[in-house]
Image 1 (cartoon, rainbow, N blue to C red):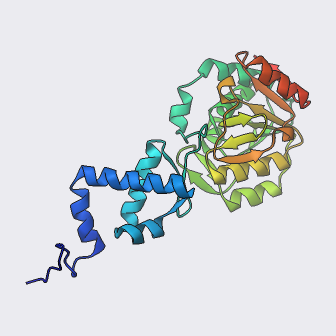
Image 2: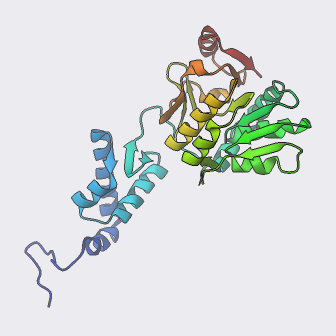
Length: 279
């Protein structure tokens, strides 16, 4: 018979055995997750290995807890742990979720973007629903070279006479984008006439932001590789900040957005010598 220590704990049980008891009680699970959230908010970051050791449960379960808290928009997952979601920070929605919002604005923005392109140019498109709309609008051209890290954008342009260059890298399931060192290294060898960059947040003081750290690095490499940078986003993206900055506002040459943009934001952009196109 197994020996049970004072307090009911069995020395022969593993941390995962005790977890089975915890996981059988939803209240205990919720209390644990609230504890993790409180730690993240007080310390500014939590690590999977530290939580596993302090709580005496497996790293697999901790990762599930962090994924659950991220799905509720309470934490932002990072390498090896998670960060608290800052006020005004944006969650990382899927491409399918983004496609449902502001469709008419995106189409108008895309058509205005296509007017900036000339036949035979090299156009760079980052991943996203607005840039996918730009890709659709570009189909009126006969000959373009398109560089993109968007798997869905490359598929959208299949059947055209364009030369489509897809960066290498790891596929992000949320956005169908390619990220990581392979994508960044390839972009260092590229040059584009114009980049159309979609963003999740555009704060005139902070700059252009995205919820994903790896995505921001690839976007930054795109900006460096382009002669002209055009931000394409609807007006709801302004004065919002996400986790990772791509570039400061001054790195942008033009902005295409809808007419619902607040006048004071429009004035701030023009004060920075950024050409603003309202559609």
